[in-house]
Image (cartoon, rainbow, N blue to C red; front, side, top):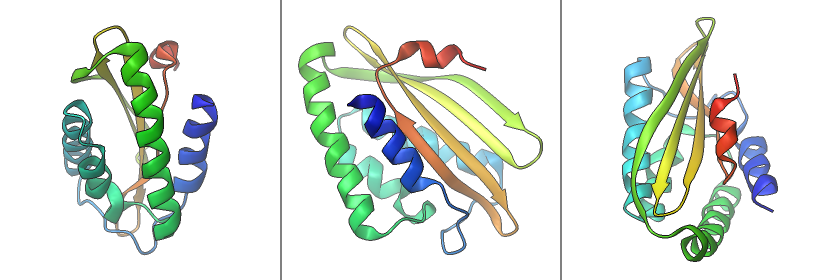
Length: 143
């Protein structure tokens, strides 16, 4: 189910952001990811999702559905893995000049949850092309 959630987030988020807000630099894109992860680590999922909303191109109803589905899954993980207490950037990689991948782990009492962000450099600037999370820590080591 978690794998499907991650795939759903990625599939719904993948689009060239013709109408999304953009970042002027990779540093700004990374800063958004850092702010997002700080909110996630505090358990403030609604605040985290509101930060990224302007930078993805999916309909409002789908975005809200993803946010609610993530919250539901997170509530289940709280029981299994314990409370979040921080995050860490574990991998940063570029593909050419146009794609930036950032992998973070959300730290919990018993497990690390990987979050992956893909940014695309569109003609108007960097956009959040897709993001996903799951409980498959081994994904943090895939190249």
